[in-house]
Amino acid sequence: MTPYTSFLYFSILAYLSIPTIIIGLIGKKRLSQAWLIIAMVIMLLIQYLVPQKFLGKTTVEGFWLVIAYAVFQWAVAYGLLLLHKSGKDKKILQTGFYVALACALVPLISVKAAPVFQAVSLIAFIGISYVTFRVIDVIINIHDGLIAELPFVYFTSFVLFFPTISSGPIDRYSRFSQDFSRRRTRREFINDLNAAIYRIFKGFFYEFILAALIKTYWLDPAGYVHGLSGIISYMYAYSFYLFFDFAGYSAFAIGVSYIFGIHTPENFNWAFFSRNIKDFWNRWHISLSFWFRDHIYSRFVFSAMKNKWLKNKYTISYFGYLITFGLMGFWHGFTWYFVTYGFYMAALLICYDLFARFHRRNENQSVFRKRLNHALAIFLTFNVVCFGFLIFSGRLDPSFTPTQAPISLSSARAAK
Amino acid sequence: MSNSQEQSAIQEKVLGILEEITGTGEIRNNLDLSLFDEYVLDSLGLVQLIVSLSETFAIKIAPAEVERDQWSSPRKIIENVEKRVAQK
Image (cartoon, rainbow over the protein chains, first blue to last red):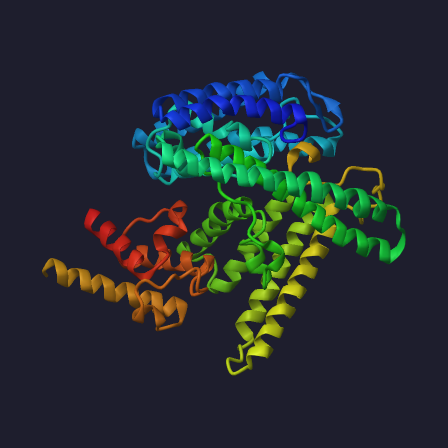
């Protein structure tokens, strides 16, 4: 069953939340973790036991696949941890790290590359794209010596945490495990429940009202309009649809996480009011962009500076942008429009950085002038971002048909 | 060298590095300046800071430790470095 899309799904979720709420209100702290694990197994069974349509074809029964995936990834991560504890020399540890990364990535790459060969990977399941980020996070942190223990229950609960398994937000292991072992007081529980209810209603409003209205009355009709005006209309409609659809999903995922005591990180922060492209990537799909920032961009820049690969730090940073956003493009899928979208974003970041460095800001402007500039900056950023989403939407691809489902960031509908 | 002298030497060095990277003396006036919120430091600056600190003080800072919270103000950075130097 696809998460957060049907009445039945929400009903089951509501029933499973009742014990958590009772446990939270009477303050039996120990029970809540046990119930979380039981609820997780039930939800995974419901979400994955039914054979699923994946990329248009029915795949094998997902539940056992998901469990096998988690066990495999735990074995990979645990193997690396043991290697670290054995105190081998640096070279072996480095090799071990690359081997572990490769093993962890094999399932995802097989899924992403399969359509290129007109095949369907046998190990595909809804959420594999997002879940892989969590596994890689664990492996990187083990390699950097920041994870000393890796209990199976913690790792599996983190990787398969059901509210966020299908499309994130992407949590980090160190943050998650703190919440997972935390015992909530009654007061804390009530705060969490408040936050959860607020987000779940926001989710309904965004996804089932705004996104649905935009799709029915603007996006779908715009798909039929030929010529430039049709494309421009589609561009804005799609940008709003993409936002409300995914922000709605994220609100559900975060809300349900809070009920179970996990403070899943936020995904959006007024992204369409960003004043430049750098600002935008701190506000749009935050859990994804921060993951890339910390584990790809910063890591690359770190190595490049330390080993003095390049002299100029800005050149290093620009290569960092290209690698980071190029990878993000490929992660979305091996199609020209996803990859172009990635490099387009990298190019924007580089251009903005050059502009900001060589353009001295005039501090003596009037208040009116400052406000005007600010508004213009927001307007400009919004439009270049929307153009990026137009590329991302696949509307410019010759195979586009108005009847196809719009590409969404939540894997349930995008079948990622 | 006594402990407090050593600490102020660290503080001076850290502030010097931070001043060079951010290009502003503001960080000396306010040790609790919120570096990321005030756009004084970005991802590039943070990595540069960490590479620089690990070279200057011969301490080990892993790339995954680029967790923004622990480097978000001059005071936090100084405390962080002092802790790591002491553990060395």
